[in-house]
Length: 185
Length: 351
Picture (cartoon, chains in turn green, yellow):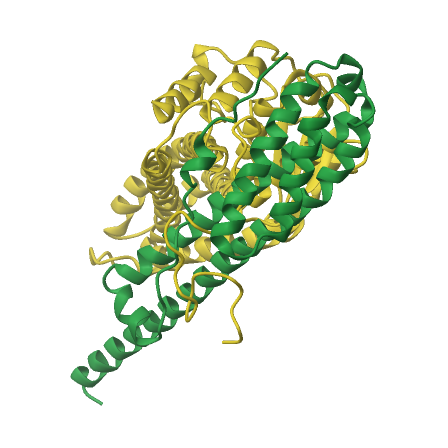
C-alpha cells in the first residue's frame, strides 16, 4: 500500500472513531436525561407520602387551623390522583402553595417548632422540595447537553441518521412562580 | 426501544413548554437569593479548565525537558555531536512519561482510602445526621453523581473535604464545627463545592500532578548527586563532544536546581484553579452563590488549625486547614486562593 492508501485508511479510521464516540455520547446523554426525569417522579411520590405524616403530627396542636390542614390534605390527594402532565403540574403547584401556608402558620406554634418529630418532618419536606427542584434543574441541564449535540454541526449528522431528537425542557409554570399568599393571624 | 418512560423522547409527543408532571419548587425551600444566568458559571468553569490544561502542559514540558537533557548528556559521551535531535534525550523523556503514568495509576488505585484514615473521620448515618445527609443527597441529585459516603470528623475547626478517585468511590467529610456553625443554605454551598471536586475528578488531577512533581524532584535530586562524581569523569572525555558535555553539565545543574521549584509552583497553581472551578460548580448545582459566599466568610473568620491534616492532604479541603487565610494567600505557594478572591469571583457570578 502506498502513502496515499495509508492516508485514506487513516482518515477513514478517524471518521469511524468519531462516529462511534458521537453516537455513544448521544446515547449516554439521552439516558442521563431519562434518568433525571425519573428522579423527579421519585421525589414527587416521596412528598405525597410525607404530607399525611406531617398533618397527623400537627393536627392536634393546630386545632384552630382545620381549614388549612384540610386544604393541604385535599391538595395532596388531588396531586396523587392527577392524570397527565398538565393536570399534575397544576396540582403539584397547588400542593406547594398549601404546604407553604401550613409552614408559615406553624411559626405561630412554638411548641410545634420545638417538637423533634415535627422538625424532622419539616426537614424531610424541605429536602424533598429541594430535591424536586434540583432533579428538574439537572434534567434541564441534561436536556441542554443533549440538544447541543443534536442540533449543532457536526453532531446533527449523527443524531439525524440514528433518530436522536431534542429533549423537551421543563419550565416552571407561571402559577408556580407566584409566592403563596399567607394570611397570618 | 420499549415503551418509553413518560418523557419527551422518541415517539412520545413533545409536551408543550411549561406543562409536565413535575412539581413546583417551593421558593422558601430552595432560596435563590441571587439570580444566576447559566452562562456565567459555565463560562467560569471553561476558563478554569483552560487554565488547568495550560498548567498541565507546562508541567509536562518541565518533566520532558529535564528528561531530554539527561538523555542528551548521557548521549554526548558516546556519539559524535551531529547537532541533530538526541535519540537518548527523546528516550529518557518518554521513559519519564511512562514512569509517571505507571506511578499515577498505582497512586490512584491506593489513594482514596488514605485520606479518611489520616483525618480520623467516621461514617455518619442518616438517623443521626438527617440534615447533612439530606443536603448531600440534594447535591448528588443536582450534580447527577452517585451518592457519596458521608464522614464526620469530631473537630471544632470548620472544614470539609472530598476524596475518591472516581464518583463511585467518592466520600465527603465534614467537621462537627462546620455542622454547628453553618445554616442549611451555607451547608448546601459547601457540600456543593465538595460535590464539585468529585464531579470534576479533582482527586485524579491532583494525584497525577503530585506524581509528576515528585518525579521531577526525584530526577533533579539524582542529577545533583550524580554530578558529585560525574564531573570528574567528564574531564576524561575526548574530542569535540567534551565542550558540549561541559555546557550541558552546567545547564543540567541549573535545571535540576530550578525545575523542582517551578514544578511545585505549577502544582499550587493547579490546586488554586481547581478551587475556583469547584466554587463555580457549586453555584451551578445550587444556583445560589449567596450560601457559599456566606459560608466562606464564616470559615475564614473561624479559621483555626485543624489537627487531622498534613501537607499531603491540605489541597482537599474547602479552606486551607493549615494556614490563616489573609490577602497574602494569593502568594504563589498556596494550595487555596485567598478567600477574598474566591468571594469576589462568586459575587461576579451572582451579578
